[in-house]
Image (tube, rainbow, N blue to C red; front, side, top):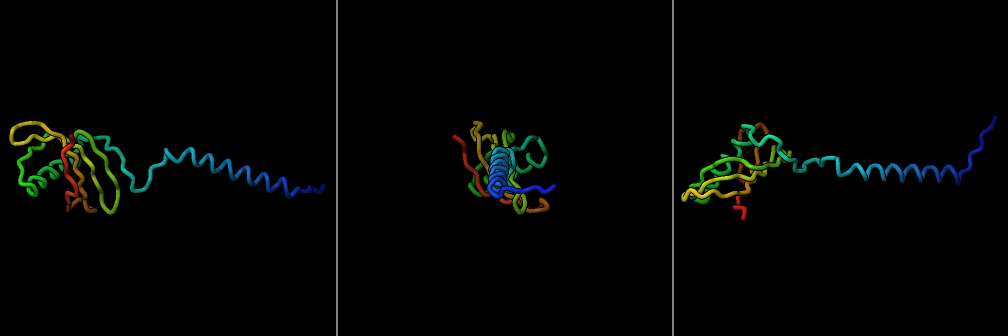
Length: 124
């Protein structure tokens, strides 16, 4: 028994399957995490996260000559790069004992032995 292939139908079949695969992949794209993308920190009480928050306040105090007192990390995200970037929302008291929220970004070198405060600003 000899099977004859119609080249037009085979081409059409390949095109339809290709389109369906692209549609399927596009629908899954939002669910996939981007390499290097920011991800929510699920446990903001993790000792490493808290320590990073304290570091951010201490470094800001040194740089800006302020006397903020770290209270807690209220929210955070992390990003894996060459090391880890942390973007933390931090609650801290000023010298008048007023509570304020700050957004801090800290880069932690691979191995965690060195940290650098890259951004610190009050949230309004």
